[in-house]
Each structure stands twice: as C-alpha cells, then as structure tokens.
Length: 64
Length: 402
Ligand code: HEM
Ligand code: SF4
Image 1 (cartoon, chains in turn purple, orange):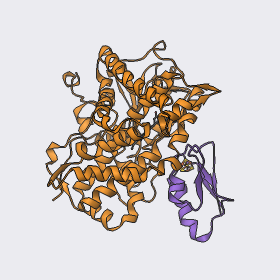
Image 2 (cartoon, rainbow over the protein chains, first blue to last red):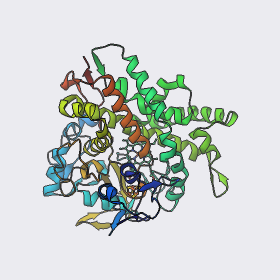
Image 3 (cartoon, rainbow over the protein chains, first blue to last red):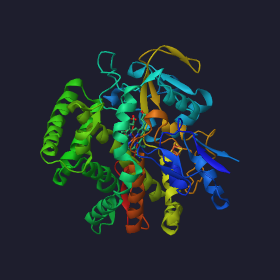
Image 4 (cartoon, rainbow over the protein chains, first blue to last red):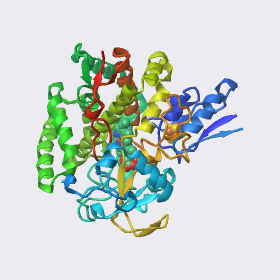
C-alpha cells in the first residue's frame, strides 16, 4: 500500500502532514509531499486513510 | 445604513448577508436554501448570487475563468473594469487572478510555511498568557475584547515588526480598515491615507534598520529581478491585516462561545488534550468564519442560473461546511470528528495562505484559555453579539470563569 499526492490538486491545506507526519512532509511553499516512496506500513494504514479522507482538495490517493 | 433596509422575507429571492436574521443565525437559512433553491439570488448590492451547497461553492472557487477575485468583499460599491488594476488587484494575491496570482502568491507563501510559522508557537503562547494575566482574578472576563481580538493583532504586529507600544493604534487601524468596507468613498480614502502614512513610516524604519521579519522580507523580495513596488508592499501588509486578524479572532471567539455553552465538550478537551488537533478542525468546520466573494467575469449559465458579467457571487465556505451531502450529521458539532474535509480555508488557488498560522493561533489560544479556566460558562447569553458581514464570529463575549 502506498500514498500518492496529486501535486496539481494540492494547494497546501496542510491536513496530511498534520495527521500523518510519518507519511507526509511539506515543501518551502507549504505544499504537501510524500515522504520517501510513500509505502504505508501496517501500523500507519489508519493514518493514511484519515489523511486521504481529510484532504479538502481530494489530492491524496491510496494505491494498493 | 443597513438598518434602514427592508428585512428579508425570502432568502431564496432576496438574500442579504447583513440581514439581522442571517447575522444572528445563518445556518437554518442555508439549510432551507440547500433543500429548495441551491443558488439564491438578490437584487441587493446591484445583483448577487449565493450557492449554498458544497459542490457549487467548490465549482465557483475553482473556476477562475468565469469568476474573478478583483473584488472579494461584496458591497454597494461595485468596481468596474477601469477601477482596479486587474489582474493584480489592490491586495495581491487575494484580489489577483491568474496568471499574476501565482507570482504574488509564491512571494508570500514562504513567509507562511509551516516551518516558519511553527517557530512562532512560544511567542503566541506567551502572548496568550499575558492576556490571561491581565484579566487578574476577575470572575467575569470578556473572551472577545480581552482575549480573542488581541491574539492575531499581536501576532501580525510581531510578524510585521511594528513597535509593541503601537498595539492599540494598530488595533484601531485594523478596525478602520475592516469597518471602512461599509463607509463612503471619501471616508475610505481618508482612512487609507492615514494608514498609508503609518505604513510608510514603518517601512522607512525597516529600510534604515533591516531585520528578520515579514516587512524586511517584502522589501527584499523580487519579482523577475525587480524589487516590489511600494504599492505592492503596502498592499500585502494591508492584506495580512484584513485577512489575518478578524478571521482568526472570530475563529477563537466562536470556539470559546461554543465551549462556554457545552460543558461536556469543554471537559473532554481538558481531560483529553490529545483531542485538540481534531477539535480545532471541527471548530473550523462548524464555525467557519470566512465567506468570500467573486465577480462574474463573463455572462454564463451556472447550474441553470443566468449569471451576468459583474454580478456578485457570495462564496459561502461556511455553508459548504454544513452540507449533509459531504458531512455526516453536518449540523452536529462532534468534537472528535475524525473525517472532516472542511473548507474553512477555501479551495483551489486562493487557499488561505495563512492557514498554518491561523490553526496554530486557534490551537494555542484554546489550550491556554482552558488551562487557565478549566470550567467556564456564558455570563449573559443575550449580551453576546456576532459580527455582521463576510467574517462571522462572536464579538462581545462575557464569560464567567469562577
Ligand atoms: C481562522 C482564520 C482564517 C480563515 C478561516 C481564513 C480563511 C481564508 C479563506 C476562505 C481564504 C480564501 C479566499 C478566496 O478564496 O478568495 C483566505 C485567503 C487568504 N488568507 Fe486567510 N483565513 C484565516 C486566517 C488567515 C491568516 C492568519 C492570514 C495571514 C496572516 C491569512 C492570509 C490569507 C491570505 C494571504 C489569503 C489569500 C491567498 C490567495 O489569494 O492566494 N488568513 N483565507
Ligand atoms: S492535505 Fe491535501 S491539499 Fe493539503 S497539503 Fe496535503 S495533499 Fe495538499
């Protein structure tokens, strides 16, 4: 399982790195970026799902 | 002015966001519109529309072809094409359209990035505690005029690097700018001139004594190798006042208003501090303070409505946040709501540049208030007032703390 950010849709609302700092970070402009390769370990599945469900821009997707 | 206007009888055909019913409790109005007429209209303000659903609000926010940000505050003074230097606008980037918008926004974003903003936390905490200390051991305090209002004012003043002893004067400038929206063109000009003189003085002080703050940052910033025009620098400063102060102040005061009336939520926040992050998002959803506006850029059909160039569109992010299509139990405040795709900070290219700062201020303000006063109640619910206009929040907020 992997998290992906669609950079064209992300406007830096900052929900993802607030909810799951293990999976997401921010760049100089405050836009969300995926940490490393975005692999979601089992203990982070719930947080990944919450990040996806809270992004107002629908910019996050979860790939199985 | 507004009190001589006829009261609204049907919000679907004659809405007015300055109507006393809308000001005191807009939520049932929006709910009614969603079920029978998702895009309301009014001939007031020279003609305006109000989409009440999340889907339609989102469509307007993301459509910068058919809607312009040349003016984002709906008033009787409708700007014409000649009035405003589109696509730059008077307060970039909030009043800018693409393509200039991206340039103006890119310029301010680094100053508001989470890294920069998070470093302000200790200062904000200290500011809150000074305000709480100043209340002494009074049994009744004012959560609005003694607390909420001073937090963003103090933070922006520090960010801009303006003298601490100017705080009352600075607050007056903010209030003048915000109030001037309703006043005559002459009064607005007089206010603008007075404030401009103050900003120029502070800018000169930063030219003479550069330091590490937002004013010096703007003075050094360049677009394509050229320093910003003075008007752009002042416009951006005014923007932080207009965009950053009564918005955050409203979010803080409405949250305290909620806690003063909901002892169970207050007890949960006191006893389960780890809830604070989700609670902050629910405060933002439920009491979203900011409604924006757009002007229709060209004649077009929107969801069956014949929109004409220069009609206003009131962009109700707070209404979108109560849409049951998107939020379960949308009209219930659920302090531990985990799934909350709220749009209090807008959507699309104009997403609030200050959202990281606003969140931090709101969180720290609530944390410090409830730490000092773990139980409190509304002193006299009838005395609570809410601001009229596009930024909604509790203003007079008497709270009994012991
Ligand atoms: C709870 C507090 C706040 C709320 C609810 C809020 C809400 C909003 C909203 C809805 C927009 C979108 C405007 C549009 O679509 O036309 C916006 C834009 C903006 N806000 Fe905030 N705001 C808050 C606090 C702040 C603070 C503290 C600052 C900075 C000091 C700030 C700076 C800005 C700026 C610069 C923009 C324009 C961004 C652009 O046009 O690209 N805001 N805000
Ligand atoms: S929550 Fe969405 S919009 Fe916000 S930074 Fe993350 S991906 Fe971007």
